[in-house]
Length: 257
Ligand code: FES
Image (tube, rainbow, N blue to C red; front, side, top):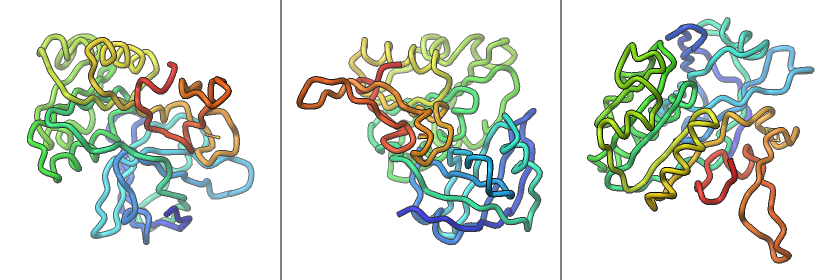
């Protein structure tokens, strides 16, 4: 069930250049949220700007708290990043389908601002008894959320400039460490997702991809997020899917990248 409510900012800080961590106190949203879902955050003027979809990084259902980690990319996100503890923020959520929780040796791969949703996913897999969680996070140079990610299991880093972990991308780290998996979860920029999809399909590994970077309004109104799906209808037409409504998580074999 999704709700629209005024959440209270508990804490906000910049954890890397232009990347902000925001803890919110919600009434209902945190109680209903699952890993891989997102919320739409409204701007204070409420009128002109579309709400911004932001992925959920951590959920504390018991206390009703939600953590969002996002990059400031424009006016809307710049505005939220100025909110301080005690301020109100209007949010709608939880939205989207989320990740199915499965696998004995799941491999979680996040790149850039696709890293945050892997925190709650790893925590949820561990909480349901999975002891084989492996996470690979890819960064340009600055690291963030490393402590949270390593709490779920084995944790590997890739950086573009080689300043930490494997030099290169997440797939380079997978090869360097010989990481094996029975299910893959991925979120990040399109070239990364394309490489992971190809790898998973070649190896025959079930792979779930979150395409959240493609979203704009997040509420099914703008159609900016439409992607081609391989699912055929009765007349063998290719179906288009809205990432925000039908996703953001898709089975890799279902979508074209
Ligand atoms: Fe606007 Fe999906 S993001 S319709």
